[in-house]
Amino acid sequence: MATQVPVEEGVFSWPSDDPRLLGSRCADCGTVVFPRQHGCPRCTGSDMRDTELGTHGTLWTWTVQAFPPKAPPFIGDADPATFEPYGVGYVELPGEVKVEARLTESDPEKLSVGQEMELRIVPLTTDDEGNEVVTFAFAPVS
Image (cartoon, rainbow, N blue to C red; front, side, top):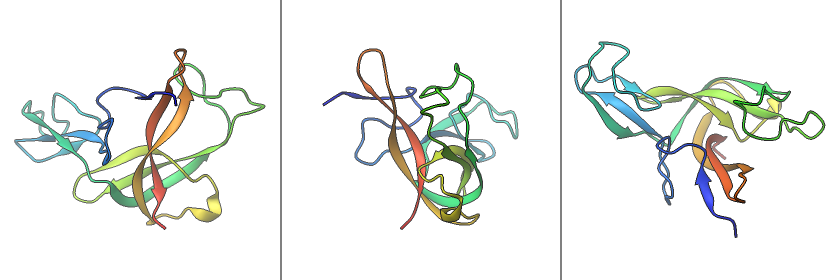
């Protein structure tokens, strides 16, 4: 079996049986950001503390990426003949932050604003060393 590696170190806890997105919380004003940052965008404070974010939220808005984005920076199948559309949305993590993320669902009939979503780690591509590159996404709660 191929080794799984994260798309980017420090974006989510990996490897983990309970993966979490990694954000920052401002010790001065309580603002939560994702991904982690060194300074607060609200109060400009610099006392940012690493925090693991929640794994459940609600779909705030969404769309379907129906054509291959420009590569780079896109990582994945950029060939128009084999590209598979995917959902993209903002998921609001209660009391924390809205996260822009890939969705595991791309069928517009199966997505709706306000829908409950949960964090998943999903395959993205295979790197030059044969590792399975994984990323985070949100899936509709069954």
